[in-house]
Amino acid sequence: MSIPSSSALPASLTLVGAGKMGGAMLAGWLAGGLDAARTCVVDPQASPEMVRLCESHGIALNPSDVPANDALILAIKPQGLEGAAGLLYGMIAPHTLVVSILAGKTIGDLQGRLPSARAIVRAMPNLPASIGRGVTGAVANANVSPDQRDQADALLKAVGAVEWLDDEALIDTLTALSGSGPAYVFLLAEVMAEAGVAAGLPADMSARLARATVSGAGALLSTSPHDAGQLRRDVTSPGGTTAAALSVLMREGGVPDLMREAVAAAKLRAGELSG
Image (spheres, rainbow, N blue to C red):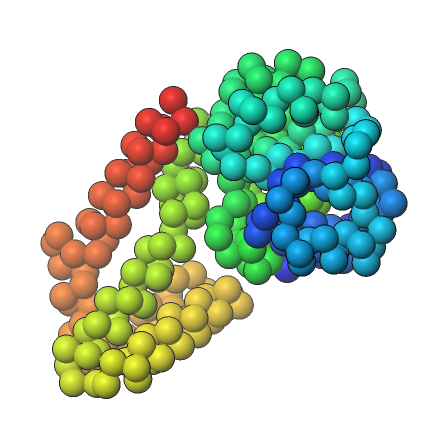
């Protein structure tokens, strides 16, 4: 988890939706020095863990009167936006930065349902953000000031890396690559384990080996100065076992072609859902 700078965080903040992702973000903000006394959490179904977190830091949970703070973070389910719009109206002032992590909801959707909102950032975190190791794509509308963009950047970095996009249309591509990407990695571990069983290993051992191999390779990739292609070449001895396996995986119609096809299919579906 990247600890955000307290100087970049907004002076006051409201979090609407405190599920797994919202809760992880809040924990990161608090670790970075967010002013708990000027923080509100709105979630009528807050978990016992969230209730304890708010109580321990003196954060107002579901107050009867929510002020229009400097930042409003929307972390509810996308289908809940329509029903929550009336409640959100009073939480937004002209100076309020709205940061949405609602999948499939465009900046235009947000402006249409929240007409009082001016400065809007649309963000797309992925699942590892729930443990502070995610990557988030973000795009800002023209009303977001440089200071507000810095605030949004600090907020989103609480759960991992942030990549800023100049074109909202690229959100669908980012969703297809990094948003859906953890599932591709989980599938790799799954089929590696199945292949190990087919080759004679006990199922539980094969699952442990596959999980440790994928997580270890990911950790190496995250810390190495070399790119993925170089690391692949480093572990591949000419004429060796890895080269034999890669000759199957990388042949025509293999993993490179399938991955391009998979990302294209995910991008198409993301566009359909957001349209």
